[in-house]
Image (cartoon, rainbow, N blue to C red; front, side):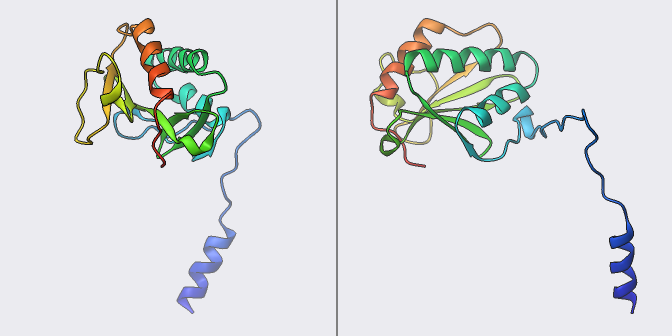
Length: 158
């Protein structure tokens, strides 16, 4: 009987609904990384970029434009709360991803050990190299060159 009373009380309790004009803000996870639902295409990546806190959103838009410019027809997705980029041929896999941390944006080049010059960040994973981007510290020309090189290598199937 007590279980039925609790169930009835829960059923009678009104649920919160979004009012017209209310925009649900994405949850920011540890370090400010936006929690965005898994999805394929440009829309979830743009939602992730829009939710990046502070200066990181502007840098995220710059990175996205540079990637699109370097790799026409780039394929995009959000997986594990991170944007992923791949060439148009799905069979080629993903060549890089982004992730927000408290003080920087981390770019993971999945075949980074094959890039010249090597991106500076080492990884515990054999082929991966990282680029940590801090506010006002993006070398656009070098980044675009790494993106072009990375897109021509076999991607990571994730």
